[in-house]
Image 1 (cartoon, rainbow, N blue to C red):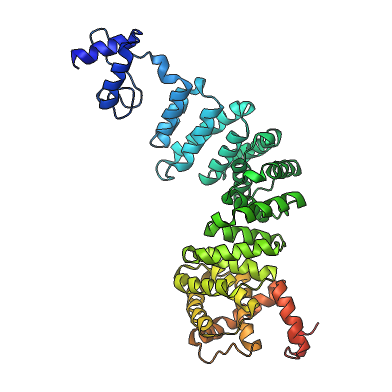
Image 2 (cartoon, one colour):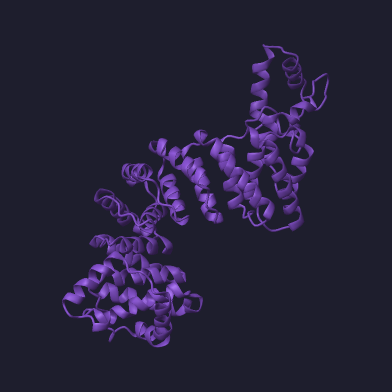
Length: 442
């Protein structure tokens, strides 16, 4: 170290106000935007080497709350994080606990299972000891981390989730939009239905801050409630639709598909203005839709009894054709079922898509569940009922009918699925035209 630098550091350390700026400039240039040069840093904690009277940073600086938060974020693996939390257990506060959970959810799940279990036990203990000091941010972050980190499988963590839900109810007024969305998303993903008190508290808070929701908050909140089987109260439902309408131009493909899927699952048909906005946005983003986005969007429209606008229908068909090889059983079943509900003439575009999706049906048929098979049956049945749906030129669809037709029919008989609104309307029309056989009459 040069004498000049040592002198500057000595002056800074002893409170020399004149020396401080000079020392900062020297350190800033050599230390990559840190208060100390890189060659004076140790692995995790900054300290100065004693040199010619230069004062060292006291050990107390290493355990300050701010430094501990940084150390948590810089932990490289579960073992490092576990050791850090154990060493600093006496100084950990509620913010550190939240930060530790957030770090945990980003860590790769491989490695030593015992270390992961040990870390979870430490996190649980610290969470319970600090819960009284937590607000909505910490509660939401921890629930989100438990879900993302796939840590909800043990009885002790499930008990912790129950305690966190009770805490969420008491601090619900401190929740910001993302906290509301993350909380209900986490619980829905874990398969946990909150009690009436928490559900009410989350809905009241979401309604109060709805004007601050971003598109992801809207979509995640609605889809989470739909997964729980909960229809929001009228105030929240209206507030979410108003917010979705205001932000429609910012929605991502997933936000569009999740929003319309949630509303359809709840049995809600949106206002015409919002439906139009969602369809316009979906059309403009169609090239970015993944298979689930495509399937959820067309399924939702069919379930709501809404015929897609021509541009959107063509865009979804084109995207389905392009990504068919990535469709899972539910995606492909939902997509063909939706087109059976739409009942559009089977033109060249439909024929091309049906042939490609039929190939995919055959590829994933061994993984289909009875509900998927019901949907495929209704799609195949449409070829017998719609004059424009001609099987003669659809080789792959014929193979599906021959190989899977009877199996899908049996699932349909056993499951007795409810019709979509479009199916009801079309069935009534077909009956009035005497197209249905007598056994299909009401």
